[in-house]
Image (cartoon, rainbow, N blue to C red):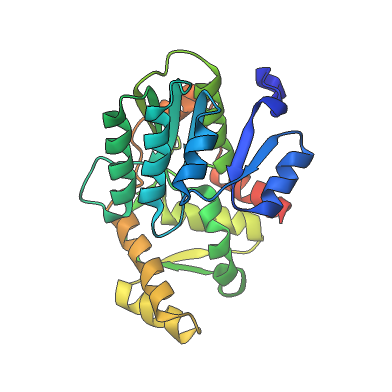
Length: 268
């Protein structure tokens, strides 16, 4: 934040994770423990701030939580801008993965509040957990067919958010944020080869085969089905490149696969 002349003590980080809030407080940020399901607490907190950054949640009822924040912002005379981190192609109703994002965007644009929407692509860091199998087998198995993924690092996406929140010209604009490159799963396997220092090859499998393999490894069938559904969504093309909004906001090329994976591994 210092690079953008924004002091940490002018920013309030809100949420339920007390450990994370403690880390942010130690870094100089103001913090507020709040459950987004508590509409009264949300309204009170929102009313004390002029700019609201709504990071999409993970709870099953996240849409109701998002709508609570948006309603509070629309009612507060103090709020001047709401920023929302959505999902790439959120306006395409073919992709069920984005249904909550699409509904949140609709609520935000209908609220009357000044907004900026950032539709984030697939994270490079999502492949960290996927390194476990290739580390021992040398095979990246996925039900993604010949799909491409314009993945980007969380750091790049966070920096883009910082740019729009601290500069002018983003009122009522929706940005579609993709990495610069459409990576194939063969490309991802090659990046894993570099990171793991062993050869990794991509093996496309049918969804049913992947489901069976995950369950046989001891994974809960519900979680296995969810992971397979993500691969099927990727196979449908939802995370393919949609433009250069991200690199334009950053003013530089986006982070590549090897750098993104290596950086994340070094943190763990």
